[in-house]
Structure formats: structure tokens, C-alpha cells
Amino acid sequence: MSHPFTPVTGLLAGLDLLQITQGGQVLHLRLNRPEKRNAVSDRMIEQIHTVFIHLPAEVRAVLISGAGEHFCAGLDLSELVARDIGGAVLHSRSWHAAFDAIQFGRVPVICALHGAVIGGGLELASACHIRVADRSAYFGLPEGQRGIFVGGGGSVRIPRLMGTARMTDMMLTGRVFDAEDGERFGVVNYLVGEGEALTKGIELANKVAAIAPMTAYAVMHALPRIVEQPPTEGLFTEALMTAVASNTPEAQARLQDFLGGRAAKVTKGS
Ligand code: 1HE
Image 1 (cartoon, rainbow, N blue to C red):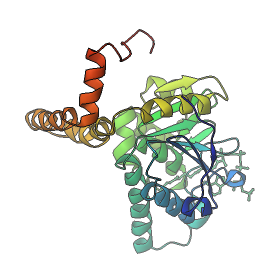
Image 2 (image 1 turned 90 degrees about the horizontal axis):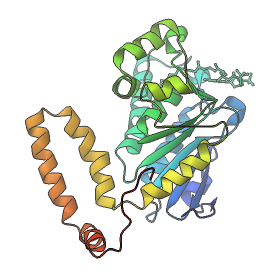
Image 3 (image 1 turned 60 degrees about the vertical axis):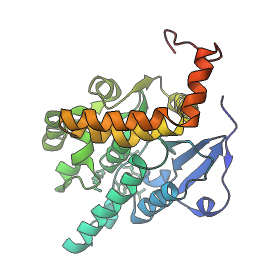
Image 4 (image 1 turned 45 degrees about the horizontal axis):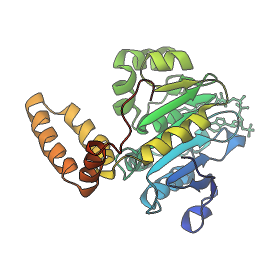
């Protein structure tokens, strides 16, 4: 069920580059620098990090979107020119910390994409757990053209979604993928009509918020580790994780609900 979204109060309300609202158990974080196409400045990355380490306790899913015509134009290039090598390493690590807080945080994160999803914008989207895109979305890694390299976790996360060969092509030739390519290549989980990404994102965030917290935790924290483990270790980790998840009171209650005929059945198209 969807609740009306209202502005948050307290610490998160003071973050001027983000617009943060909450509807029930869903927090909506909107990048809010449309005049710069939501280019990610040092201050914005700090603010994103702050949100994910200070999520209100009742929040069980987050939706990320961008204000204006584009989701995100990537790194704020005006801040790049004056950085020395040491500063550049720390800068990249500050993005890693913020995006790790998204990927390996407490609750699943969905992003609603439209327009440009470029450079650091694609790195941000890749750190989320589910991506919805409308047909206006397009994906590029202009780092190649700018004479730089990805620094926001892109080399780790983007090949795992679309494959190393496609990312190599994007970076070496400046190739831009449209929303349909994004879906075919595994970057986009849901492709919707123009202007519909937010509605779909809210619908999905509400579904995700209803999942048992330990299941969400296992999907976010155990699954990506298991796929990186050799199969024997992966199966062992899976056995431990499933034992933990199924022995929570929440899981026991849900299993009893199904056995008592009180839970929804699995149906086509749900
Ligand atoms: C910016 C940025 C930015 C826009 N940094 N200021 N990313 C890029 O290389 C993408 C660069 N941006 C673009 O290609 C275009 O701006 C867009 C396709 C995203 C949008 O085009 P458009 O015509 O709607 O807007 P615009 O007129 O280009 O930009 C509006 C303003 O935003 C303008 O500033 P203004 O003061 O002249 O109004 C632009 O300069 C500004 N702007 N994008 C700074 N990115 C951790 S490593 C990650 C590495 C990367 O992300 S590299 C990829 C960087």
C-alpha cells in the first residue's frame, strides 16, 4: 500500500542538495540540483552518505530519483580540476564509502532513472538493488572522453551488471546505451513509459518494504558474497544464512500464515 510522501524532519531535512520525503516505510531521496543536472559534488556525496547512515528506524526501503530533466550527470567536473593525486584517492574513496553504505546498508534501495544516467550517475545506479528506467533514460561513461577513469565503484559494479566487454566499449568509444539496451544488458530491471519510473519505483519500494528484514538482509549481504565465493563455500554460506533467516519469529509467523491459508498464493504476473 502506498502512503503520501511528506518532508522528513530532523538531520536529513537539513541536507540542501537532496530533497527527502517519507511515505510510510519508504524514504524517497531525490537528487536536487537540477540546474547542474544533479552533478555530484563533494557536498552531495557527503549528503548521500549521511542519509544512509542516518536512516530513520522505521524505514524499510529507499527510492532514489533525480529532479529535473535528468537523473544525474555524474561527477561535478568543476571540482575535479584542482585536485592532487592524494586528494583524488581520498575523493574516490569517499564515493566508495557512500555507495557501499547504499549497497551494503540496512535496507534495499531502488532507483528510478530518466534522462542522462552518466558516469558517476551510472555508478550510483549500480550500487542500488533494483533499477527502474523510463524510456527517456540513457547510459554513458564519458570518463574516456574526459581523460579520466571511473572512481565511484564503477569498475567493480558495472561489469557485474552489463559485462566487462560492454563497459570497455562504452569507455573506449563513448558509446551510449538507450533504456532498451539497458534492459537487454541487465542494467535495468523494469523498463516503463516516459514519466512513469517514479510511480513504478514507489510501487516496488512498498513491496520491498514488506519483505521480512532478515530476508532483505540475506539478499543484500549474503547473496553478493556467495556469488563471489567458490561454489563449495557458497553452498556452506547459503546453508548458514537460510538457517538464520528461517529461525526468525517473523519467518515462523509467515510460514504459519501460509499453512493456515492466510497468506497470498503465488500467482502469474505478481
Ligand atoms: C555540469 C555537469 C557535470 C552538467 N559537472 N557541471 N559527466 C559528464 O561528462 C557529463 C557532462 N554533462 C553533459 O553531458 C550534459 O550536461 C547533460 C547531457 C548531462 C545534460 O545536457 P543539458 O543540455 O541538459 O545541460 P547543460 O547545458 O549541458 O548543463 C547545464 C549546466 O549543468 C551547465 O552549467 P551552467 O553553469 O553553464 O548552466 C553545465 O556545465 C552543468 N553540468 N553536467 C559539472 N558533470 C567518481 S568518478 C565519476 C566520473 C564521472 O562521473 S565523469 C562523467 C562526468
